[in-house]
Image 1 (tube, one colour):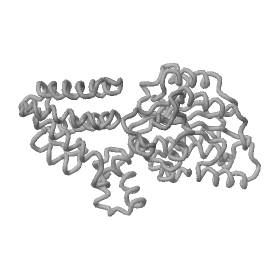
Image 2 (cartoon, helix red, strand yellow; image 1 turned 180 degrees about the vertical axis):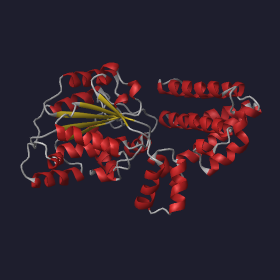
Image 3 (cartoon, helix red, strand yellow; image 1 turned 90 degrees about the vertical axis):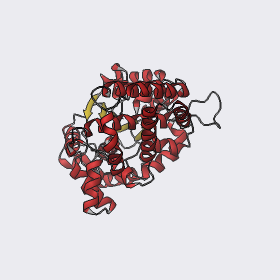
Image 4 (spheres, one colour; image 1 turned 30 degrees about the vertical axis):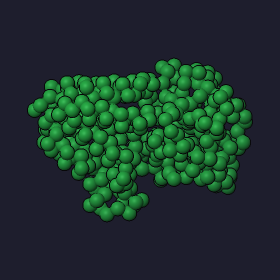
Length: 385
C-alpha cells in the first residue's frame, strides 16, 4: 500500500518515514485515534514502507542494494501476500469448529484479504459480517498469540523487517494479552509490531508501556471533501456538506453516502426511545427493548455509541451555533423539537446511563434486562424543558 492512498495524516506519515530513514523504528507502535481517522490505513502504509525497503531511497543505509528488490516486494505487498507481513485480528468461533479449537486469524485469512482488497477503511461491523458472525463477540485468543509467536520466530524471507499488524488489540483475552506481553518484552530480531487500537485504555498497562503511542487526529473537513470529490466523484457542494457532517471521520462520510446505512436505523430507534420515554409508555418501551435484544451484542454496542453521539449533538444544538453541530439533515430535523429536552439538568445523567449500558453489554450482562432498565432510567432522566 502506498502513502498516497492514505487520506490526510501527512504529519504522522512524515514522522513514521523519518523513523525508518534514521534507523530509529521502535519495536512496537500503538496507533490510536477516533474512528474513521485512518489508523489502519497508516499502519498498512507504514508496514509496506518498512518491508519493501522503500525508505532506503531517502538515503538511509539498507540491507538492499538495488531497487528491483523494492519493486518485487511492493508487488507482493499490493496483494497482501508478502511472507514478512503478518496480521492478527479478532475472530469468532464458527459452529463448524470443534469444541476444543480456539479460532486464529488463519481460519479467516481469505475473508480478511477480501476485506482488505476493498480498501483500508473498514469497521468491526464490516469484519463481523465478512466472517459470517451471528451473536458472537470477536476476540483474539491465546492460540492466536501462540501462532503469531511461531510466525515471527522465523527468519525474514527478504532479510529485512518483519511486521505484525495487530488490529484491535484491546480484544485480546487475558491469556492472549499475557503471551503478547512476553513477545513484546523479548521481541524477535528486526520485528516491528504495529497495534491499531480503538480503545487503548482497555489494554494492559504493561502492554501500553512497551509501545510507542502515536495519536492520530480527526481528518480535516478539506481532506474529506477532497477525497469525496477525487475518489468518489461527488460534486463539490454535496462533498462539502458531507465533509461538514462527517466530523473528521472518513467512515462516517462513507456511511452518509450510503442511504441505507445502519445509522439511519439507529436514528429511528433513538427517536422512538426518546418519544416513548417522554410519554412514559412502558408497554411500548418493553417492546423496544425486546427489539434491541435481537440485534446481537456488537450491534447493540454500536447503537449505544450512536446514542451517546446524538445526546451530545442535541445538547450542543441548544446553543444555536451551527459550527458546533455535526448532524445529518434527518438528525437535525428531529433535534429542532427534541433538543430542549437534553439540557444541563440531565446531560450528565443520560451520558452516564449510556456508558453504563455499553459497559454492561460488553461484560455479557443479560441484554434484555439491561435495555429495559435503560428505558426505565431514561424516563426518570428525560425532564421537560
